[in-house]
Image (cartoon, rainbow, N blue to C red; front, side, top):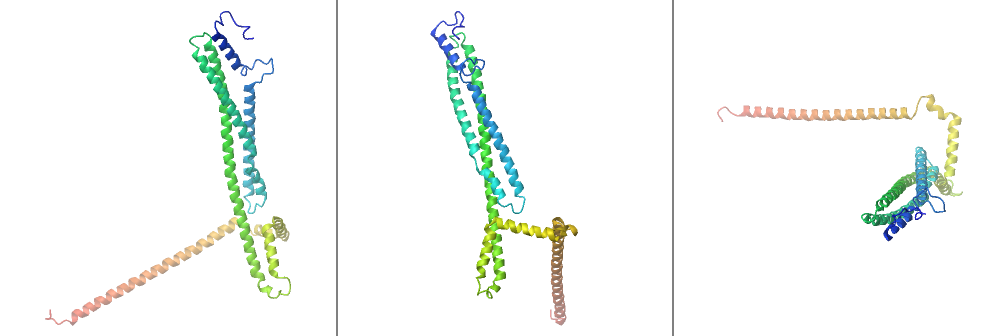
Length: 321
């Protein structure tokens, strides 16, 4: 079709024909107005692929911040339990981001190869500008195509950078979650050990009277291990205790007497501040009393020394000196 529309004098040599062939070969994937056959629209395909990758990246960011916020809200409680661990499991899975990163690397590699080909053709047509008349227009078209490919590559590299940052954030958040889980497990084990110690101290004197029955240490160990490693048992005990407090009215004692954690903390701070001030005052008084005693002893010694000197002077005869 391009040869049919050639004007007279446009093809004067084999070089002119070669430039026309190169121009048509490079234009085949960039001319969006021609769609008479089944030729793939490469630029549109790359743009669509990059758009899908960036959409998946945005969804991954939204999911990451949503899960992070949920985990933070759960950890505001004293005993978050296994719910926070289940929520944080998605932070340990990097498969979606890994697939997106792999896809964007493929896109960047293909764009890089196409740019290399376009740059080689551009150098060839630039070298023919002095000898062929329409080489300038062909070189300008190649500049536009290289610019389009560079824009696509920049978009793909931006998506790649964002995915790498997201993977870094997930790794950091996973480390934080693992630290919290380790601290929680340490706290639970310490609480179980403390409970085991208390139960042992309480029931040890009774073990002498229960020697004929099943050893009481077996029950103590069973209770301790059940409370330590069974979240269901802890949840049941917590529910029973909460039901007991709310049904007996003990839960409302703080509201009835207008006592809450803030007032208790303030009362504790006031009392401890008074005790510290009192202790500081007593220390200062004892220190001042000790200094007064030392000063009085020093004055007494000086007075005694002066009196002794006066007596020595009086005991000397008048003409002895």
